[in-house]
Image (cartoon, rainbow, N blue to C red):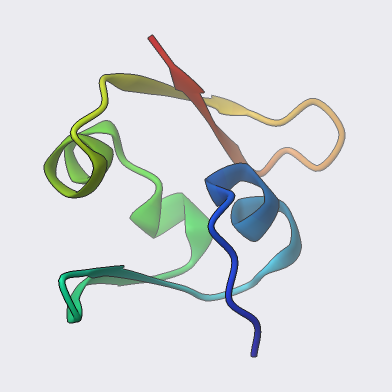
Length: 64
């Protein structure tokens, strides 16, 4: 288990993500299931696009 605040690093190296907001679990699962623009807007108040990371193919968050 590790705690990361960099979403792209978490997506690249972890098989299971848990997204917390104000101490509550907002989402959990594989990076492909968790890294969604709607969730990022709800939890972090950012507009983002999700693209495959060039090396690993895992989801990568790109803030608009």
